[in-house]
Length: 399
Figure 1 (cartoon, one colour):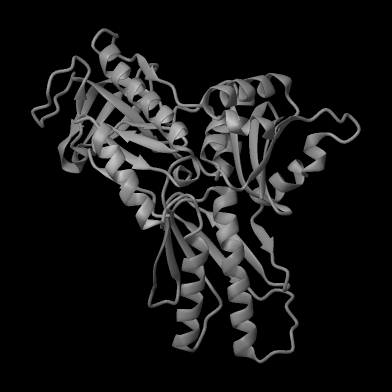
Figure 2 (cartoon, helix red, strand yellow):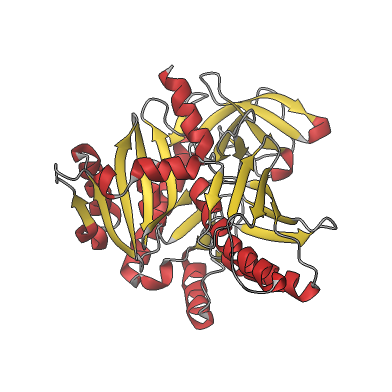
């Protein structure tokens, strides 16, 4: 079971997902500069760069986004059909698909997604799809039949992990709401000026609540009255069945930040070195191009044979790496230098275990291969900024 903790930390709203005895996910959102991830705008094509098959789209207020022309899903703001060619000056509807990371501009898409707790409506991909975590084939066949009866020609539907646990009434209510939102968005785009914000994504603390697994959320706790009211309003409108989970924490003797060790958790999540219970440790170093994780034996002083010792530390490291990737929101290319193993069967066992651990990450994470240098290559989808960049951005805003 998990708890969603929402509080203020150094002038920002901090959302912490706490499971068991540890934090598993942290997100920080500045109250001064709101995150644009998920927002939908009318943008203007500023420049087309043919050699990288991309366009740079002006979203207004000096914010430029990157749109791959391979996306192939262009919606013109005036409602006219796309001829497959994009021109400088075109006003198009785009959604921020990935946050700006380091020096890179936000990534845009023409495949608009309107996300709910049970469904995602997609304007570009017109199929009906299911979360890979839904394994009940009979339920999927029944749901697909029901969705085909209501699906329009201008959108597709992705069924999310929480859907099998909801009632038919809850599913129908949300689906109709999402369809109304998408249709209204396209209708309003015809009359709105360039750079208009057509759709504003929920703040991260609300999207974290929406995306949490329905069966595992035990409580939503905040010590901020205004955030409590905002969450309460959201739950009444969208998740009334979870209203009983909301708690306003008011103990002045033991502040919420102390109860959940937020300062200590942040210090550890931003630190370079992570100690393991065995005495080994990880060194985590994000760079501009990729993240490198080095596994070391450290203070381990077990009495097992060398082969067993190496396997024990590597397996423990795999568990902790899965935890750290999600906690720190590390993404892109991740290179892991485990302690070298001489036997092929040991390497296969480690990769299988790491693959199983990473498959539980809500963000798509893939073990690619062990290279000839015995380095394990992992990729994790980029969506939001990594935690260290979120904190760095806050520091810059305060200067």
